[in-house]
Image (cartoon, rainbow over all chains, first blue to last red; front, side, top):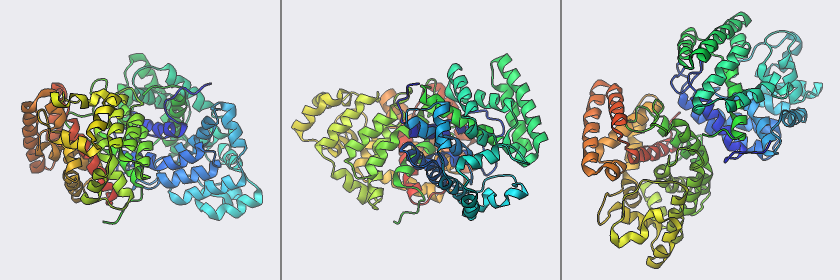
Length: 293
Length: 293
């Protein structure tokens, strides 16, 4: 697949972060029309700008873990806390693959398989820059609790875990919620590439396409962040409501039903943030493949 | 004045472009809640990302004209046409001064005074990347019509006009509309620094501060773009309506009166774009001086 973009991969990744947060309605998330209490749109703008240096490192061929840590550090230089940690976890290997001219499922999977224990250590260190909502690890993996940051380094080195190994543990944990972002890492970003194809096949303004992409993704499976915060039952309920809303949006050709869902989720404190991460990744792939802005 | 920002000058300049377009309501301009027909919010996001390379050149000490041309070229890689030409004309020397640790009226004026004929030639070339609304020059300066792009080079070289000289001609033209952006170049960016101080003295979320800054600037003097497109009478009328709206906003402490003005200006096709340029410049200075996002 040839590149068809007037922008570099790092520029497209930053733009994908911006288009993701601007996409509206994106039920339960900050979007062009909604803040979530103290978590505000402008903090996502600052997070996007701050991420760019790390994204350029990824494009220049830096190790995935180091580029990710740098992007997260830059992202965190705003007062909203964690705005785009999950987006960057998906974007970093994608940008690397795109810069190598190999933005395919195989190309990005290869990059993930090439990660080392040093990448895993850098990933853990990234947690020191920002509070990320993660579930409690099983007792057997207590030493690998992501919230330990660099304190996890000895356990990582002793068990010789690469960053992909760490993702594998989160993708299919012994107990707790499987992380769909980690599953993307393990499964060659299949959801991301499919979602990008759907964005390209869609029509209308980019921010409407982003909104429909979000709704399709939310209807397709339970959101990891909702499951982590509110339980798997709540995440399935959110998925079912998104499915019904998607039906109404497709039947009417209008995003109005999704506006209603957005109001409801904000009122209920439901924040499907992991689904938004995947939308950013899909927008990046679509931009690389010629999505016009 | 010491730097008090967690971001580099180039990052703050890019963020200023994003905060400017997101600031709402910004009567007559694209903002977080409004597109203007085919000129859409996401094109300003892409324009901001595309500008970043030129802004980094400015920070690294490249000549102002070359950095500006590069920023404009990058900005233009989206389908909306001219989104931020005027913003970049103000930001480029400001970023250079900030990177030298001298973001003062004197510091930026010095950079403007140091521009050369080559800077002027690069400035004219920037017009080849994008359609910019400019008035007809007086007959005596027909060779310097900005729309001539690089065809103006011989006239610039023959008359030995630096970029500051070109700005001086636009700041105080023999006939036609004086350009307030050019006046900033000649007058040490006094409006910009005053507006930045007012943003820092204001309170509340950054995007509300941007909206109030816009209204204050629009109430202070006629907008150059409105005067160019609709005549000086129309520009004075816009200024008076902004003054009345500013009174109402200050009296009520609510931006609602400005929302009404925004609806009216959009309906009338009034686009005070030069005032928005100055808001971006003021946001940049405020960010450099510690405005938190």
